[in-house]
Image (cartoon, rainbow over the protein chains, first blue to last red):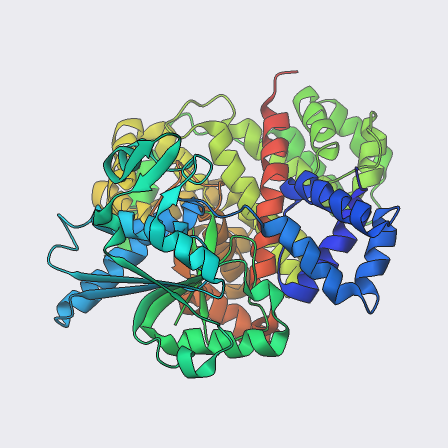
Length: 275
Length: 297
């Protein structure tokens, strides 16, 4: 169902103010298709009716369903290319240089909503490619955590379908995957750098032990939290980073008003947060 | 390097150019006419109609997404009424800058150049609005003209400049540092000298000279800071020469940002994330505008 530009802007602003997820104008058709599904499910007749529902006392619950529609199936290897490019060309060399000068040769990365492992493994592959150059003799530790045990088990297994690897550059696909009957089996060379655990981001006792990371990633999770929880979790991430470490959220997410300690760092096609 | 020496080098370089473009006469006349507070739209329309190129361009621009008319505007007079006096000035000037360089070849593809120029103009305008800068139109124009020095290098020093553009794609160096190495001056000083020749008002000349160093500006550092930030935001969007993969900046470390925050402390509350997302949304509009200006239809 097509929605007018005015209604689109109204819904976009409402969703953004509520959870910090922004719908780019180029994604209007996408929001339309997801909205249509939710309108059918809720029996609302127009975009304005649905907007009314979101604003009603039942709105919070409905927003979760909508966010599920908008973010599901979104995980795949090499998902956020601008982010990865900036890390590879700029932020990683910068951290490696600074740590190297101090004699630290260890890099720690945390994928804090790791789902079935695509993000953590993507980073592992990118770092492996630097093994001959800037990361020679470095210790690499990548940790993936998720609240859902099923996806943690999938991540540990490291077997993927064609959809998950559709964005993997050929070079990486040849080097790090074995294809078997339509399945893509990740090489043990990549898997050995990554550990996966079940973890709840609300669990303060566990959060304080996640220490000294250079990069933390947390995509499409904070949008589900209310402001107080968001602030608490983001403060943990801040504390868990090394000085000058980087924190990245999903491609259309915003932490505005959540934490005023992080600084925004802008790179081609996006931005991240720096301690 | 000595700033004065760099300016002198630029001045000599510009003096040697014997076919330096000029601003069309009609543009100058239109601007003079518009300075009259009792200006009459019919008079402006009559004058503009004597320049076919300018008329066609005004029609294309007024119908572009940037100005968003509810239906297509087909007569020049209606376009002028719709735009209002301030915007006519903006369009007349813009149009004449484009004419001045339109048929020049050069190393930077001309529509890429203008996409950056309009991008910086538009982002400058948005920032100016956010901080309630007194003259939004001035911010827009300053953004559009800030890099005229690059056009000169691109056209009159094609070999060296093309080497520079290749180099910035292969290693993380700044365009401006390479220019200094190769020419002993940069696009800032060169642009400044052109602006002098064209009798641009001081505020624009200063932006051209100091858009990378807004703290050095003396007459309007806020304007320089606006353009400086707009330039940075465009450098990390698809509104930049050749797409520099190393471009990145930390807003809190930028002198332009501190200048604006000193003037407008409430800027610290700006939703930067949303601001960036809205800029992403505006990029296709800028490209469409540039495409329509250069389309031959």
